[in-house]
Length: 432
Image (cartoon, rainbow, N blue to C red):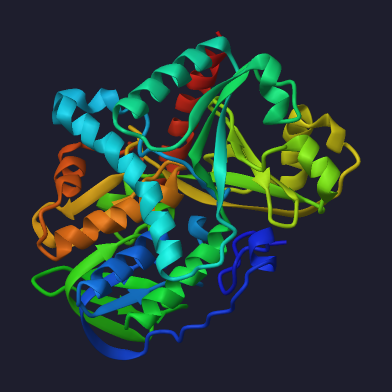
């Protein structure tokens, strides 16, 4: 069973439970627009919405189906924050810049919630999230983060959970405590993407599926080629993330596509679901090769994790992921796995989203490398791009553009093995 169908979505729980079917014709012939967007995931869809709401004409090109990539396959966790270890950038953007990024990480979740409300998108949005501590030092980190967020004016309930109280959050003895955040939560990502596509179309955005971009001619008015058509636009947005490949080698050199995988159990029923996750929260641990999981609307356990850098999916994702699930929830030993799927996420060396314009090409914009936090970070990136493209003052664009991003050495063939070695070293440090 292929996990990366080129004409339809991966055979996931999300595809099986999608609540609408959208079909957009491939691009054919010659077209013009104020802005052409490449990529039909959260980045492209939300940038299209932002621009259309500001009065620009937009054409969006998707190589496969809307939400075909990580946007329609991810764990569905909507978690505050953007980037990892933001303090590492203080020498570049200063303490005030770090504070602004932290505030944007809060704003990012609100953008998603507002989008859902504005367009009445049915995507099972459920608030409630818990960071899970694997070691005592994680609790110290949680407490410090909580104090930092409260100092920024974070308006949602955040509370520490002691080891003896963890049964109220998760039916597992793997953790030494946690931190609840009622401002974060979980949702059905494919239904969100489809709802946003419908919203974009209602605003006049011209969307085209099965329209892989084959070539880009840069210049004052970029020309974008597909197999059957061309788009001339005043400005261009590249939002392909892990699936950019060789379309723009300079951009793709700063992103490593890493495989992430999810299994979904059969429906568990009310009693067992309540035993596993009593408060129906999204949960995530703190390991390098982290586990993340939650309940679906029909009370399946969706359990995700792992990271592969080989570019090849495991032959049997269920066989690969099931032992990880049973380590956390041994009570599921007799439970059937109904769905297994995976896909590529884009990871940058410093784990900060990459948002900016191409050097020497002020009319070509990009956003990518969300490093596993794409549900909220994509929506923030789209807001930032919308402001920058329409000439609005954008503190976010200024900040993200200042941060340099390392190009991974070795070209397409060697980048993944080199990153795998780096991740192995991080796991060894974690074990100490």
